[in-house]
Length: 146
Image 1 (cartoon, rainbow, N blue to C red):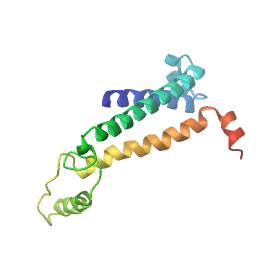
Image 2: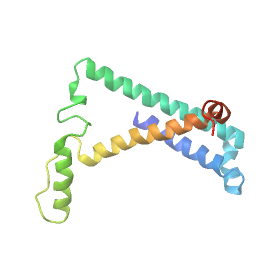
Image 3: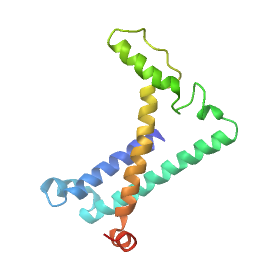
Image 4: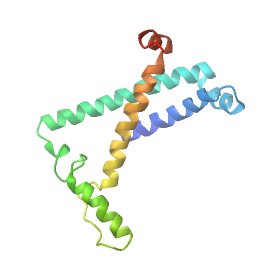
């Protein structure tokens, strides 16, 4: 999943920058491998749909795993779900950075790893939702005028 996420993100970055700056020399150069501006737009849309499909598959995997007995995905030392101890660990870690406390002991995932994991979730939800709204702007404005 990490490899697919990285490849999709890089493809979306390349096609998105090409699309955004298509009227400049940089945009035309970046769009050239994708068949020009139209190709960059359609590949951007396809990679966006692909990334949202992978994200949905990840959510289904987590839900299925939690339902069939792997509750460690939701709670316990192997969980990526934030707990009260993670909030305390942020404070302890910052205090350690300034020489005020001992280095905190983390579970399998530290607070910043959990933060990074959830940042991808919220980022994909925000970018995916806005991308779907902009996928077909004529259709969107017929439903959401303004």
